[in-house]
Length: 134
Image 1: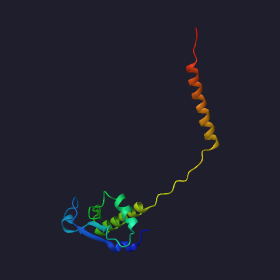
Image 2: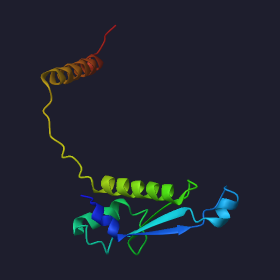
Image 3: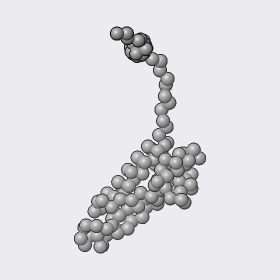
Image 4: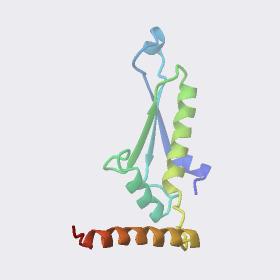
């Protein structure tokens, strides 16, 4: 379960963004990076930490830090909102418990179809084994 308290453990850094933007790029730090240390989190249980480390292994470095960055917008505030939304979605998707599969019994119709198809195959094979005399 993700609470807003987890954002107390998040570190934001702003940097100069590359690419288009003219003088704005040279003056303003609009790129936003979010850092979250999975190992040091006090709001995640041990099982949640293991799950995150497994499911987000390609996004977490060897020190257990999850890094998300965004530089698409010209505003630092908008980039920060995008990064926060991405972080929230990433954690909720990774920590979502898979539904348990309920076993179902085959229906009467499916049983009949299976038996009918088996009978057709057996007739085919029986016809192959018959010897035809001329």
